[in-house]
Image (cartoon, rainbow, N blue to C red; front, side):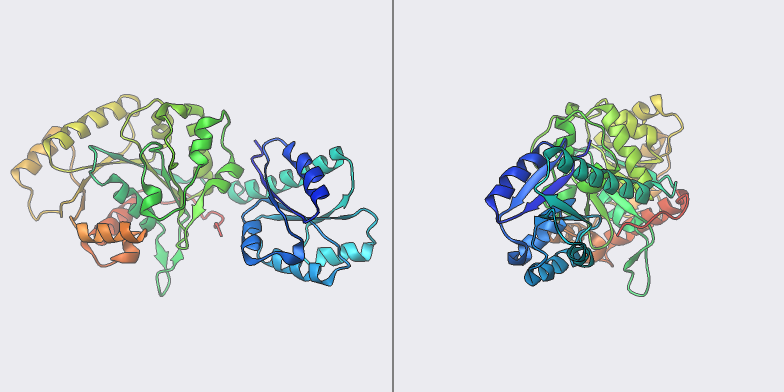
Length: 402
């Protein structure tokens, strides 16, 4: 599936209509139009152009203002954005070279036949796709998948998932700003997921599109759908609009997980509480499952049921329990020992109760490490991440996402 975003820039109504109609006929293309000449583009339009895959603009290379504007446009290009100049088909070679020096990837003659234009644009779509796929899959690394499940509602599994992903970046350097690992956090609770709210990510509709349309996601689609934070963390948030859980298909989720593992060293998935059919391909690829619980009787019983369900089909899957809202005690109390016996598990991970730090992080839309780095919550999550990195070392260095 091409699923490419194309921006057409022209102040000529004839070009907007004729070329726009051709672009609309390209399979999988989403076409936007900017009614402006290149030299009249403002900052907002330049920023909009950088967010598209392919930008096509009508220009006269004899116009010095156009050439200057093109340089500004291409200097602010988004990663892997392609710029195509639409100009006179009888353009002298010297002027074509001027456009190339200004940063244009190719010159499209106008007017030309619809078929020729579609062929040229499809060639650039294919080239761009090949570059992206080589970038993310050429290294051959296979990332680790960490799934986070809640034992009961309101237990704080999203807090754990988001902040664990942040800490798995394993930032180094003098100011702890340089991410050692490539990490993505994915919200598969497509009905009520709040990962995007926790990280102040604007509305994303990628998973809604995946649920509504019958296609398998590829590297290109995933790369388009992710939002990358300044820290380096990549986010695939749940849609804001309601989507039935059953609308995702197992083969779609399997393809999504496989692509993510090819792109990132660590992928943290915040699972929905409902155990729908497409959970199985997630668990099949999971390297570690964390069940977030507390010491209440309902949470202990739900954790037991979850473990039994998972192990019925994935007997070898490593499962750890994360006790949230409780600092690790010096000595286990009776109810701790009874819970451990009922679960036949040792409690290795405890997340201290720190509602103030958790609330501040949500209010600011940032990980706890950036808001309350010295809090008990931040220290507990850091310890969980350290344990995870020790248990699941990445296979090999992968190509870094810019």
